[in-house]
Image (cartoon, rainbow, N blue to C red; front, top):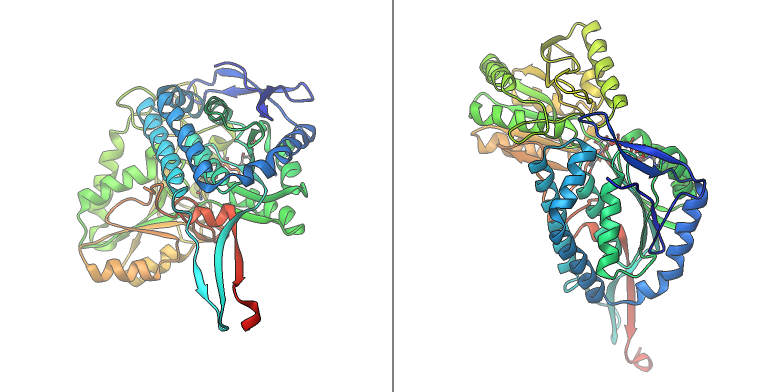
Length: 481
Ligand code: NDP
């Protein structure tokens, strides 16, 4: 992989301080390339570049901006394998999975491009004669887009496309662990003819770049995907100056299996929701809640499926490494903590030595209380806990016993149970007889409580994040009022 520079004002530039850091392959632990380690000077340069083009980009019609989004998406399609290779290398994904993620990122581009020919508002009658009100979307200005590493190219497009489509000029700060995906996206924007300055990428460490970006008075919107602790810091800083803030944060998602469920199907979805992408999904199932009557049978099915999971990044493997040593260490210490509190580690529980990188064994934990820290804290790895309940009421109470509220799933043959669970579980997304993950570009996505601040990204709902409504009052015969 070639060294990665910042993309500011349509040019590739090194960090002004001249510093770099290593982009590491989490599968092998090897350095892939060096990356610009930016500081506040680079943030200021990106803001100046965005400001210089703000008026002209805002002045384009929604159809023109949608067409530009389509051209970028076509460019992504043409370089799909190259994008997927970068995703696979820097996030430690199996190539086929990286291709799946890249295709989903491309679909987001087409979906938002189509909004160019919709971009609907409303018309309203007023209480007085000769007055009509139109609602139209208006851009916000400069958008800071800060993203996590887990699905790197999807995370780029979920923010970049709706932001530019709505008429904003954007500055993206990718995760330090996955700088290459934002860089290739910027390259494709350039090739597609996106005007210089409309989309900028400032690479670097969160602590160096993040606060400068979030506190800058010129930044009108901060759209962040990441952990709730970082989100809370960002909210405080941006809230101080009353900037709009969209936070898409973590989850501790519950998958309930009732005593009337198809247990093979439930076990299949538990494996997929808990361990795919090495559990690094905001929507991963990290709490499996089983009715006592089927607990043992379900446990056996899950444990036997876990024995067949293959770690690695070759075709046919099931899960790769976690993103870095720090995340791996967090998981290992959380497991030690759970053991000290009396938990049973029924499978996994250790670092895997099968490859040199940051591999965590798929782990199943039992005999933990709902209040234990392993039940409450998001680990963002292939670790899930299994709980026993006697009734749907108990299952719902346990599912809701969390500071997060992102997604939830229930397995049951009963329409009533599925509706009751869907109504009472405190999350933004519910799935009946499936996994806890699986969002699509046209579906809004987001959560309650510590999982977010109420916005929905993806779907037409994403436009509400990246634009604001203007109410235009047309008084077309003023003399008659
Ligand atoms: P972090 O919160 O650690 O980092 C997210 C981003 O914020 C990174 O780009 C990071 O940079 C940056 N950052 C770090 N510190 C600051 C700061 N002080 N100011 C501004 N930006 C900063 O999250 P992770 O990367 O560990 O991602 C995992 C989390 O993301 C999980 O909680 C997961 O659930 C959540 N997530 C939520 C999704 C959703 O849609 N709800 C989707 C995907 C993930 P750097 O990498 O350099 O530290």
